Image 1 (tube, one colour):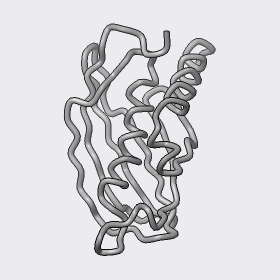
Image 2: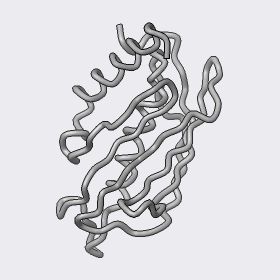
Image 3: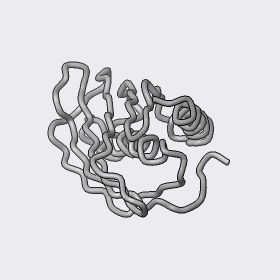
Length: 142
């Protein structure tokens, strides 16, 4: 990664890490951010459960969405979701460590396409998401 790209990625990581309040509320930890890529994790707690005593789908989605935000903004241009689809593949429970990995599949001038995989501590797939971002002309980090 070139020096300038590295600086942009670090600025994006810092900006989202500081200002996205769900990160602290849900106990997420940003593991890695690179151009077009992000990985973060969280431990499922009692506050993350639904009425069935399983991790709420909205919690899983939130983790994936923050990974998506990091990946699609990592180039320094502001990007927001146009569309996100999610497939829940298996439940998560209290104590599970969930990891969301967002990968850029295609980057265009005005849109970007991303896949996000959420796995548990055993490497089992919990959810799969496909997301499209709209890329604004304006900078995300200035």
